Length: 289
Image (cartoon, rainbow, N blue to C red; front, side, top):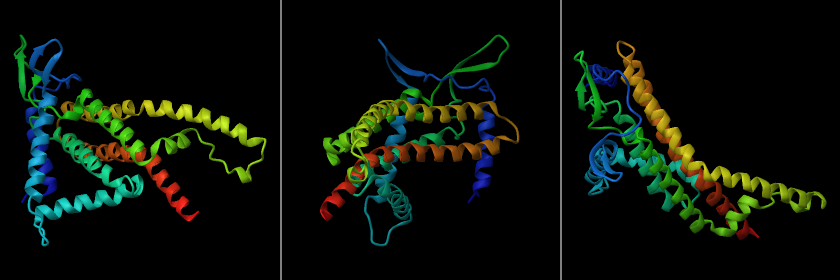
């Protein structure tokens, strides 16, 4: 068995060999593998997303196809990951909405993490169609494989799914009344607030609610840009690096890939928990009254 350090060293050496003709960087737009015309096409990032999704589903089904009381190694690893994510997300989301939200959050984390780390594999983004210039130097124009998250369309799709799921979940588990109160309600305690001040605070909270709606509307943009910028920037950094420092940047990008998967998933859970978990608190308070 190779150690983690030796494995990363081998990957960096192999990737350095594949980057010899691709040092000019990576284009921000995905390459079209099949063009149907009229704006319809299958890009390399789309194809990679489909293939990786199929492989992930197959591996998970293979690992847990027959759950056992004495779990196998694959089942133990998968259950450990699920338990860690369960303990992380449940306090954020709240117990009421958690059963519906947890599968979505796990899918986000695993899918994003795998695609973030895919850019570290030799040949990803560096093998494909191209041409030689008059000086005999090869220029890559259409990579065959590209991580889904390195395409801005891919991160927008992930952010859109997160936003639509957020809308469905908060209306189902919190309801319009809780949502409106959370956005525009006066959170001041009427008994401890002077009578003349309470209406003014109500107007302030309504204005703050308008600002909050604006921030909610730009959440898909911030989620998608943050993920795309970090993955695409790291991809170009690795393509432009050679020599002994490549191993260091490999380790950094592996860490960034993990952090960005956590950030996207945590933010998605926080957005849900801000309303649904708040609603749980109200229900709990109502039962005591």
